[in-house]
Length: 496
Image 1 (cartoon, rainbow, N blue to C red):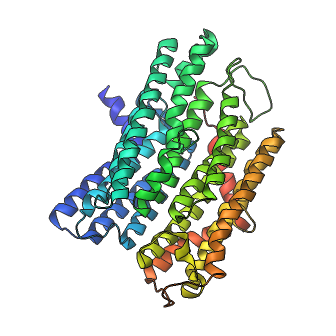
Image 2: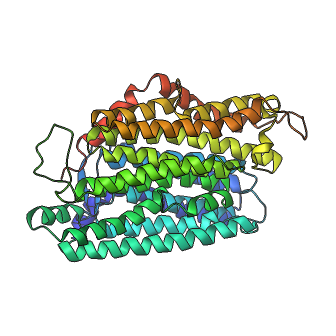
Image 3: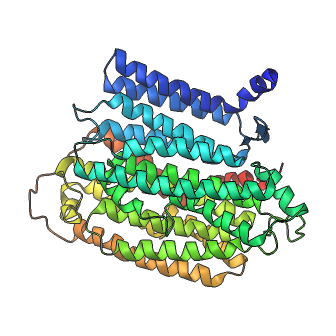
């Protein structure tokens, strides 16, 4: 058994690097008390974890008695999570909120690494117990980070609401897992599928278990009706953590949901076209996903129209994007899953870019209100143009990368003859254009009522801005490698 554990350690070397990084960040803060040094240690650890992750490219194997799956699918999502974490650390170096002298930044960076560790484990979990434990590791770290600026009343409120909703959804998920275990006698999702295919189970109990487990997944991806925590937490948390939750946490939740859905409830006897699959007969889980997708994108976009706080507006926008990505799961095929993977990389750059601009503006003005952006086009032209590009991409208009992301999602739906759902998604994109245009109008067509002094930003801030802006434009014109990577990542996904 010891030999087996040691041999499996190779598969979790990226996670081991993250664990060491978390401890190193705490020690660096205790002994040196230099914020930049702690951030450097964390960046180095994240980079090392990324290098170790690249060595697993092309590997497809189970680890620790099938508790974890190391395959191209998990490598893809772990890569998205690590890159997001690196950008968040870079954001934090420029954040006025985080660099408050009264805050202990060492704990902040250590918690970011701990949260990253939990999310990378979520991406590879193939056992229900492992899914729950990794979800809890992620959640406990994020609860603290959401309320890290404890002197701000909104931050404390955000953390408390996050804990309450998180505890409720985790309890529902755990109850669903217990029902599923009672029906099948296993927590391994592959073994569960084998039992369901050979012996069957009570359909009503199975449906109840699936819905309860979906509550846990829905909470992580901010899907309606599990989204209530999202606007308040995104508004009250530091911008850096809001950006982290909106991308990395959503990626981890989707990766776990996709693996659970694809493996647990797949009909192994289905003999349809290559790259497509069907769920167990009588288990209409796709109908639930369709309803969740339509409700999530529609509510997110409609409520965003009335928001005056830009960070809260982007929170509802994030909810809507979860609805778009849920459309890819409805397709039940490699095309739909690959479209979700493509969308996530694009979403990472454009959404992080939008939140980075919000943070920089907030640093200079002390406000996140939409009226703060009046006249910004003349005071900070580069920042305003970048924000406009990020918002155009979030809308899904060419020639930005957001257009490619939605194109592949809609194409997958059309190929699956779900044209009506693609139309619903397109109509929601039109609604999203309205509230994004409100920001354009304030930046370029309205004059500010306060200071007209130009806003100047550090060179490092401009470099980070370009690191997010360039991929948002380039991937709108040249996206073949990303598409091939995504298609390869789902080609062998779910095969044991």
